[in-house]
Amino acid sequence: MYCLPPSHSLFFTMDNQRSMSLLQFIGDEGLVPSPQEEQKRKNVIDSLKQIVSSWIKEVARRHRLPKHHIDLTSATILTYGSYGLRVHTSVSDIDALCVAPFFASIAEDFFVLLHRILKTRPEVSQIHCVKTAKVPLMRFKFDGISIDLPYARLNVLYVPENVDILNPFFMRNIDDTSWRSLSGVRANKRILQLVPNVENFQYTLRCLKLWAKRRGVYGTLLGYLGGVHLAVLAAYVCQRHPDATLNALIVNFFRIFAFWRWPTPVILQEGMLLTTVDVIDTRSCMPIWLPSGPYEYCHSNITRSTFYRIKAEFMRGHIMTRDILKTDFHWDNIFEPFPYSKIYSRFVKIYLSTPDQCQLGDWVGWVKSRFRGFLAILEGVEGFCDPNPTEYVANEKTEPNVAFYWGLQPSRNNFVDIDFLEREFMKIINNGYECSHGKMELSILLDPQLPKNAQFDDETVKGRKTLWKIIDHDNKKSSQWPCDT
Ligand SMILES: Nc1ncnc2c1ncn2[C@@H]1O[C@H](COP(=O)(O)OP(=O)(O)OP(=O)(O)O)[C@@H](O)[C@H]1O
Ligand SMILES: [Mg+2]
Ligand SMILES: [Mg+2]
Picture 1 (cartoon, rainbow, N blue to C red):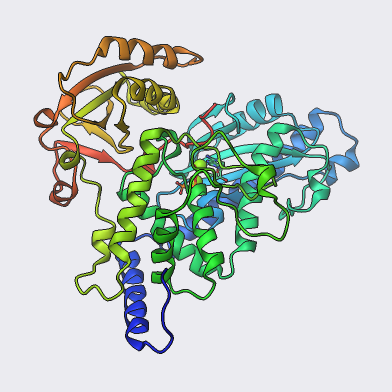
Picture 2: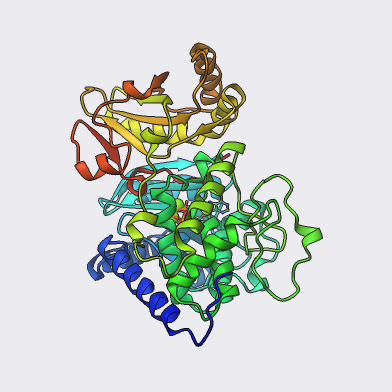
């Protein structure tokens, strides 16, 4: 238990020092966007609000609503995700929910008309629709910033600009898709209401997101933790330690979750709303409550292997942070990139390419959205697999490409029926894909066969090698949630 004897001033000094050096570390890492970057994001959101305001008038006209209804009607944009929690970095996406009145349909008015309007805007590029996901959305760049734009309809004619979607009035008789789309906004709002000190929570979450990315355990599509999972875990620690410093919150995070008795669900305290008997989520080995409704859980693709990896990382964090008097303590070590090439001697390489650069994003995004199925097959064959979320690009190849290297355990005979794996994975990929196909090749590599200059561990990352480069995970990712049908 991280508990300080009040008289022990050395503990307080060390605790404060570590908090200060962590704040310094966050600053040095450039995690917090500059005021200019923030202003750019605000401008983008204002523009989106204007676009949906005039779009909804046009929709009302097309539906032949009476003139006074057309004058009255309105739609808005609500931000959520890491931007809504104010824990985004300069390369994070903006998760922006379009909320409109009941008469604007998702199939025609949102995915056709609004799509057309957005497509003609000079600021918009790379726009595409993800219609078959649990949370259907449009994804595009606006002035270079990635936007996820899902859609919800409320049973009203006029949606106030800052509509309070925690108010049951607005949630009456809404359809399932709208409910799911609204749950991200609702969850964010509840989290911010439930934490005792929002600023402490935000700093803690920023640190945890960086830690999870560096340690290779960030990304729902790969079976790891997403931003929303970490937000709830961070909020849980903040609730239990309302007066703790930043250092103490991080220390407590590792301590609590290193010893958590999964699958006991992580549930934020909020009065007597929940009874654990009612809400146990039996499908996930790491159930984390989504605070948008009493029976909702964060969606998760965690597998046996990734569960093991995440738990090992919690324990590593605990062991490294538990001793407040440790003299050679440096935050750099906690956030050290996971050294794949030192840990694993075998890898499965997933190589994806397209003839054309502009097809690559869609192809890679789709294949990533099918990783869950491939992971299950690979785990069945190999027993264990560590899906390193980092995307690498082979610059020596002429075709646009992305490669993944997932760690495998040593095997006695090293035989893997790669053709079988490739066939099975292709079956999963082919199911439902409508755009033009790229190439997908699987191979098994032993450690010495890794591309010499790939940035696999901390030393090479610091070495800034040029032949292979890492695509920034934030920048290049396709959202974990929407593709996950
Ligand atoms: N697995 C999930 N289960 C439930 N809700 C999810 C899940 N993944 C995403 N969401 C919802 O969508 C929002 C945006 O997801 P997104 O993938 O953009 O992550 P994020 O929290 O914004 O972090 P990042 O900074 O990586 O974008 C989340 O905050 C959450 O409300
Ligand atoms: Mg996001
Ligand atoms: Mg997103």
